Structure formats: C-alpha cells, structure tokens
Length: 455
Image 1 (cartoon, helix red, strand yellow):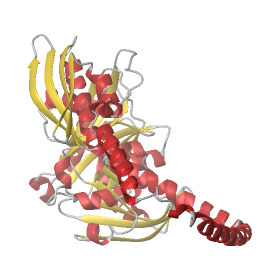
Image 2: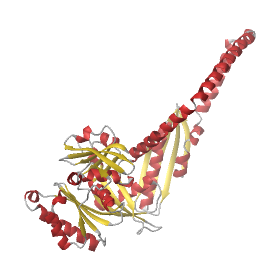
Image 3: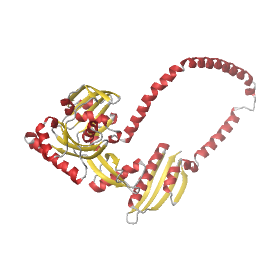
C-alpha cells in the first residue's frame, strides 16, 4: 500500500490518519483533526469515509441478469418505486445467496445521493474522483469489527458526539446498519441514557425481528471510555461487550486515539465491494494499478536487453548505409524513364481525377453504414429500414414496433437501444427520434428514428 491518508469527513469536523503499510500491517505516522484536511490531504493517495446518517439501505429482488449496467437500472427503478427516489445515486450491493434462486436475485443495496459530490457537497466531485476509496462510517466500522473477530457476528456501536452509528456485520458482510443524530438535549445531559436506550432497542430488533444472532458488542469512539454505559448494557444484553484496541495490525498509536479516529482505521480494511466510487473511477484505478506494476518490469527488461539493443543499433546503421546506396542507384537508373513523353502531367491528372471520383462514389455509398450499424441492427429488429443519401449526409431510417410480456422488459429494451445509439457517436454518427409511442397497457413500443453521418 505504501503511504496513504485515511480521512473521516462530516459537515462539522474532519479527521485524518496517515498510514504507511506493508503487507497486512500498518504504522501510524501521525493523526490530525481540523476543518480543511480534505483539501490538504487530497493530493497523494487517500481514502475517504463520510459521516452520513441518511444512508439508504434496502433489500431488493431483481431478475437474474449479468450485465452490470442493467443491474443498476433495475436497482434504481426499485428505489424509485419504493422510496420515490428519482435523484441519481451512488450504489453498492451484495447478493444474499441464501435467499436468491435461479428465478430471482436478492440484493442488499446501499445508496448515497450524488448531490454529496456537488460543488457545495460533503466531498466535491473532483476530490472524490482522485481518491483511492470512498465509503461511509457505517462500513468503516465493519472493517474494524472484522479485524477484532472475523468469525463472529459483531454489533458495533460508535459515536463521535454528533451521531450514534450502529453496524451489525459478520466478516465482510454488513447485515444491518442504523445511524441516529444525537439530539441537542442529549448533548447537554443524558447522553449515556440516549445511547443505552437506542442500543438496547436496536439490539432487540436485530436479534428478534431480524433473527440475527449477535456474538459480540463493540463500543468505540467516545463510548469506549464509558464504563457506566458498558455496565448498563451488560444488564440487558446477553452477549460479551468489548472495546477495540490497535492490536499488532496498527503500530504507533494508543488505544484512546485509536478509538477517536476509528473510522480512519477501518476504511483501509474494507473490500472493494464497499467502495461507492463511480465505475469509471474504479476502472481508472485498476488501469493505474496495472501500469504501476508493469513499468518496473519493462524497465528491468530494458536494462537486461540494453547490450543486445546496442548490437541491433549497429546493424540498423549498416543497413541504412546500404539503403542509401541503393536509393542513389535507383535515381540514376530512373532518370531515363522519367524523360518518357507519355509520362506528362496531363496524363497523370486524368488518372488522378478518375481515382478521386471512384473514391468519392465509394464514400457516398449508404451501404458503407451497415458495418457500423451491426449492434443497432441486432437489437432493433426493425419493421422498416431505409438507406439514403442527401447532399453530403448518409441516413439510415428505421421503424421499430415491439411488444413485450412485461413493462420492465420494455423499459430494459429501451435503455439498451438508447445506449447503443449513444455509442455510435464515437464513430461520427448522430441520431434523431422522429416519434416514440409507449403503450403501457399492452406493453407495446413504437419508435421511428434516423441515424446520420456526414461524409
């Protein structure tokens, strides 16, 4: 991992831990807290965990599809139907294999509104795209829970004073999460009573309503110092209660500071499935990772083959001299041919114009569009096709009429069709929808469209 800054960000505070890792162990170089840490530490390698109480958590069912884009469309449609969420979202999900069947996939979905990466949002988009990992406090707690005990189901309770966050996890699986803002009255007096009541209520819900057997209760953040809270919870909760400690994974840090900055330590321990970063950002990171591993190998090979390269350069130099001598000989031998009266400029111009005319005719043939239209023709299966040329524009006109067994099938077909049309723009095409009629009662779709390209 090398050197990395792990940040914990909220609307009212920012914290950072700078780690240097080798293998599965980390050394803490320093910790810091303030209000401008995100800008200061977003130039190198950095992780982000945000304190966001409104994290959306839902269990959804979708058909068994393999295409990732289609999965996301189905998930977001479920969120729209259930919660009325029309805003674009950052989405992650994990499949519940026990509940899934060959006919359906049951997914635990977590979502964040993309407005948090607006210019005035919690993490500006430019900074988010430069990060190595982007997640929430709820999942960072799960990273520490797995470190404490990877084989147990851990109920982890954390508070920094602004929010009370509770995450139930087992290994890499987050089973349940809930976050509550600490009300003003509880900040002044009765904070431990507020925590005790909500932890006890949530624990009972998890154990009885959700049927999740909890093996261990962890108290962290400012809760780690409250012996009275631990004793009170021990009276009503029938499981062990503990406080996280750095152990031998994180060196150079004391227990109190470790708990205060706990989400910063949990984020680097999470699997990639809890990274909310957009797909294009993940692809860029993957490419950079491959590149960083490839360059040292190529440099080593270059140094190994440097002596052979010197010999090859000498061979190239000798060959270039031979070629130069042949060129000179060719000039002498062709000088007589070029004096032939048949090789006049008018003759050359005639054949040149003839070749240009053939090339222009070939370029203006509408049939040339078909090799680029293969993906569109495959998915469209149109009723009518018309190829044409007007002025310097090639046109493919088509009329599509399709019926579907279900409304969701019509929606997915339409999404794939427009995705293919958008993809043609990279080849210089534009498209225009002349008309579109959706019959939601009989699940019928009629579209008339034109695809064009300038010659």
